[in-house]
Image (cartoon, rainbow, N blue to C red):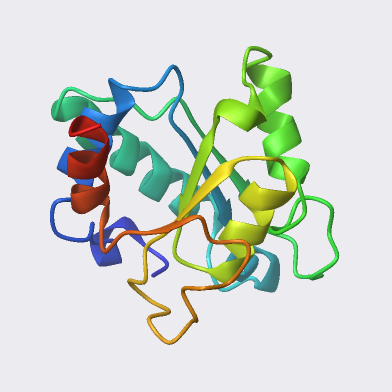
Length: 156
């Protein structure tokens, strides 16, 4: 996806993010965006996607405090997940963040490694990588969707 018109929330995801944001002090998105670095996606288009995504969640009564993205192509970039650069950017902007009390929800092993190396609880949603072993040591919980994750937290 390179334009807002191509962006689609997974079913129930926007509503779940809105509800989940009420349970957390901050809701932050961290995303690798190699397409920007390759010149496939314009940075202005990516900003529009992020702005529209945040606005949709706000319309539902929630919030996304910030979206941090890494356009770097190099796998070893300090800001590219699973490296911790975007987390450190978030901590710099929101110093009250405590990684050991944070939850990383994602759909790649890179997301899980990102969270685990910082001491976060990790939640794997197998939306795009269902073939991954769910017994990986970087995965604390496997939950089928953000909607189900919201229900899981609400019932705790």
